[in-house]
Image (cartoon, rainbow, N blue to C red; front, side, top):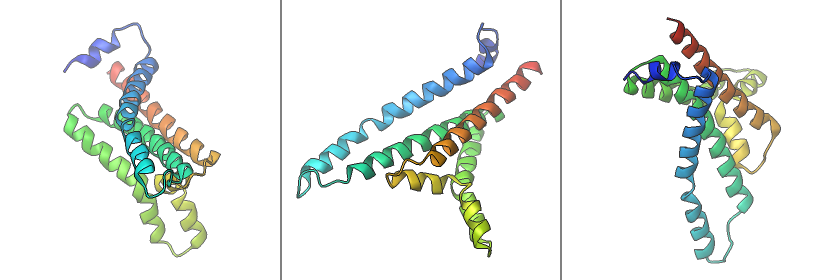
Length: 166
């Protein structure tokens, strides 16, 4: 729609542009996630025993969802640079997210070697998400999600720099 060219002539760097767009999507995601806290409160209060929820598990699930959401937003931002068509970018994003969540686990099930299978599962998002959602905040999982996010933001910046030159 011509908005990318308008953004390129603004006195901001491409990193600032990408990071600003990324933070905007993260804030929107947090706003969408915020009302679900009402469900947690309601289930906790209306259970047969008040406070019957494992709050550590709930908080871990929220952290896992937050990290997964941030990764998916970085992937979606990258996918939007690959195509000018929003539908195509959406489909690319869905495919990339699906492959990163389930793909490595699917590949691991095809292997007979247990050690390689475990290593391959460790490359996928599902294993790290499940670890965090159990209530265990392990630095390996946090570094994984931050690395995936940074990698796709870097790819987005590189793609936009190449687009800006051409």
